[in-house]
Image (tube, one colour):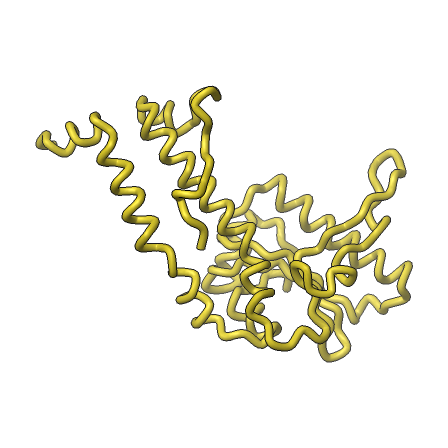
Length: 217
């Protein structure tokens, strides 16, 4: 898991963040912006985290492992007809199937971004059928929420945008990757104590926070 202390967050010369507007305190706003940036970083690092723990990479493309299998050149066509590459988070070839997977850390998703990601997965599937001769029934699309408990939670977080059978939990993804899900969850807790300590120490530097603690509410 990423460290809050390494996050940049909102810069001093930038406009106030939503957190600063919420609390009316510059220092507190800056601290929460660092927390927010750390959460995003943790999610972005998930694929690398999984890739580094694979013991068998046959048929698996994730992060820098077999990258050519998940980066599809000229697979995306924009409204002007120009072609672009499609970068899929993870591609798994197993039991005669090709599984195209979008990987998320959380379970609540931005509606517009999710719609675009699903569209990209569908484009990738169509590209593999048309350009590489794969059969439609041999290609699956999955939208993974690593920390979600079940498919219903993922579908709710996607606000109804996921087609049937697209949802995939982190535990199911780990099964496909031959990884121990529970062990990985524990490993990702490594920096929780350090993050909590840093957060508390930074809070103690804010006079208004210390003053607030001394008052009775």
